[in-house]
Image (cartoon, rainbow, N blue to C red; front, side, top):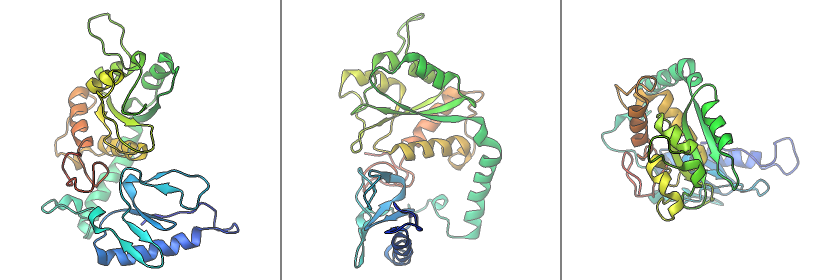
Length: 282
């Protein structure tokens, strides 16, 4: 259970204590109600952790999940929406962390990633805006240390990116956009929308045609979730496959491997409530 506050605990009218007490109560009640996921308790709402984003810097209810229903209400009584809760898939023991061995295996994977992998690559967020310069994007992609493995693009509306940034080369010597350059080098590009609600739908407009060729749809993921998922895939690929491709020797194959994982619903970070864990998002 995760919580926080809009006003620090030491300040007058702080919401910190209320949120903390509520999160403990929700955790206690949730264990009897089938809550089997990371949740955020803030003000009078219970949110899915991997769907939440901050939407207001001033209001006491500063978070929301624009593309997913609330897991429940935290009012005079705590009410859960069972239809929105994550269902652990039957026959997929890798999802469960109910024994010391489960925790130990997962902890070893993440300790290895922290000790040896996280300083070997970068994941960047590219916010598209009118007038963005090609050289700016090129520098972000090519002059970043450690090298970029993944890019989360915050595009316009349904997934639109202007041609000078996304142009796909059609012939040798043809000018290409920096995102196509990144794609051709094995960098995984995730197309997300900068609009607070909704999801990308490449092909709706002609200006998204290039992105359909070089990117994977974020399918309603928040920027926070997309970055976290990319870092997890790159740092701990053996959590998903016992013999994953090696990015340093075969970046194109690794990009395809990572793209399939990114498009799969792991813990309810993409899709609608009825999207099965381990399945493709709708």
